[in-house]
Amino acid sequence: MSAPTTTTTVPDAEPMSHRQTLEALSGLLLVLFVAMLSGTVVSTALPKIIGALNGSQTQYTWVVTATLLTATAATPIWGKLADLFNKKILVQTAIVIFVLGSIVSGLSQNAGQLIAARAFQGIGVGGLQALVQVVIAAMIPPRERGRYNGYLGGVMALATVGGPLLGGVIVDTSWLGWRWCFFVGVPVAIIALIVLQATLHLPTVRREDVRIDYLGATLITAGVSVLLIWISFVDDSFAWISWQTGAMVGASIVLLALAVLVESRAAEPIVPLTIVRERTTALAIVASLAVGMAMFGGAVFLGQYFQIGRGYSPTEAGLLTIPMMVGVLGSSIVVGQMITRSGRIKPYVIVGALILVGGFLMLGTIDHETSLTVVGAGMFLVGVGVGMTMQNLVLAVQNTVALRDVGAASSSVAFFRSLGGTIGVSVLGAVLARRVTDQITHDLAAAGIPVSGSGKAGGSLLNLDVLSPAVVQIVRSAYGDATGHIFLISAAIAVVGVIAVVLLRPVTLRTSLDLPEKAPTAAGAAGVVDGAPAVLDERADGARPDRTVSRHR
Image (cartoon, rainbow, N blue to C red):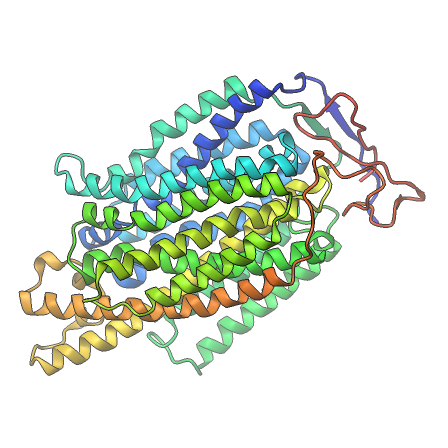
């Protein structure tokens, strides 16, 4: 047991009224919109971007993976910081990092620079994704939060619908160019910064002798990074059974095992194992991991499918993704209202997980000639499944922990969901690259066309403007046919999420911001701290006047 840590709350703000909560929520939703937009705005533009920078299919994948990886690594750190320091300052800091990353990304001169800039941008994205949920949890009780999750889903849908359309219009507009896909988020982020400065009023929480588990965060990041690098290059640069595979996989296992050991002994762990081991949290993490792998991994390549596999323009590709976003928007709003009325969450996430599997199975049948009606129906089902599961898995976890631990608990779920997305993009991207390479090489040889170094599904093959019509047709067929295969893999991964949500305990969402005082918390599950009864630390930014502040950790 670590030594007691004094916690004080500086009353620099009165409890927020309902009107103030709505005003602050507008700023938080704007922040969430910016974070989501940063990923979706490049989804339809990325084929053009990588083509302009003469990048490869592997680099295409890493432009997305780099952001997801750093966001994944940063998410639990931001969440832990939110349990220790002022949340408003943390949100604003994340916005500044995001803005800087966006500007540098837009100034990149080659694919390597873009990947590095996107990795830096991901640090801010991870903070925004984690902190928005944490701050909302500090202001709104779980039962009422279902309604607000509908707003979150609506913003997510708006960003995911508007992002691809905006990205397509930008790259199709000659006087703008692809660089504005990154610059466009800067003014929106600055507006969000100003809105939050004016509307978000949270008491400052100060703790003495605070120690952040940087070692654990470093080990987690290193372990995951080595694994993803192996996934990207195995079966291309080296064989599955080789000394490189043994070295990378072995190093990843050792690093992650050391991370678990460090987290179990750290006074302030990045991912608190006491929270993660709780049944609801553990199952929600497994489900989020599967949903993240399936959703991020599958959706990232839809823009590439429509443009390279089917020959549509970036703007048209953005329009063709609308069915998925309509599914997300409609299901998240409707289900959010139903959860608020009933207080029950398990039935909805089960149905959502099943619909997600069905949508991926339908998309698993597509090729370069599939009817757009079938493709649209599959995307709509995937969107409905995502809208019913993603935010509500976080809500299920937030309902089980005390307010003092909501930052660590929320960020733990977001961490594993983002980790799943990172692994999903890397794995499915690697599978797609291998299948495309094999098919293009085979078809070029069958057509009597010499296979050059670019014939390995990289380099100039993503820049269709410089290819002959015969090669363009071969490339389109290869990408169109290979995409259906990765959606079948997504469906198999999503089945794991179904199993996890079925095993969740059926609970009724509480109507209070915090757990009852006698309920066990991650900080004092036994009810005693250093021989004294544990006092609930409600800390709560936006705290009510009758709350007790703990003097023990």
